[in-house]
Image (cartoon, rainbow, N blue to C red; front, side, top):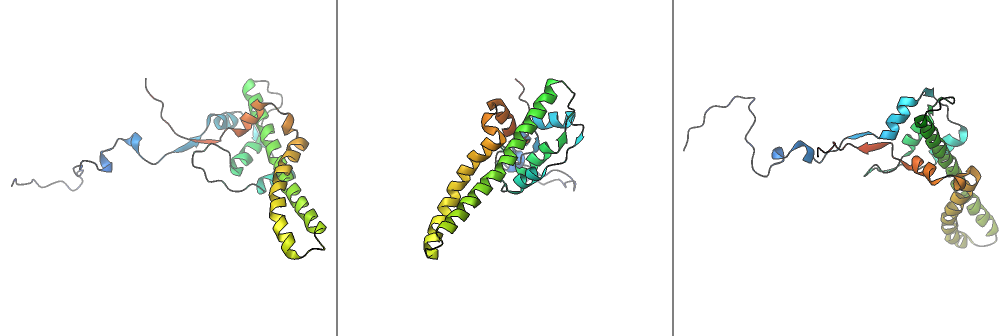
Length: 189
């Protein structure tokens, strides 16, 4: 029964209890994706662009798209970005050595991916040829299992041919670092 005063048209409406407008900005559901520390380091010490080789391009082409829920892995676009950076060979700083080591580990991972598809396809083709005197149903039963098993054999073969099986765990860890992360503000303690 109170008479309300006329409000200015640009005035902020009053907040209702439990509404989303009353929450603090850091409690919002939306997140901001930012480059990770290693990506910033690579961008800082990069001296130009590097041309990708044919096996690197084929390896990236054979990787399936990725749905990022936590940004804990690198997708093929991130790997392409790592591989396309050029670093000074004569620079002896440890930061540049880390970037070159990461690039080499990513290169091995991408090139080894070709062997996965090649071995799986070759094993499937050999099974198809060896079952040539059988009816098509027996071939169709065997092929998916052989192809799936061939991907595992191909990963091992690719790791051996590219030297990934002999690399240090540190190098493999550097190759697995994500290129993007969710922004989290520094906590003030």
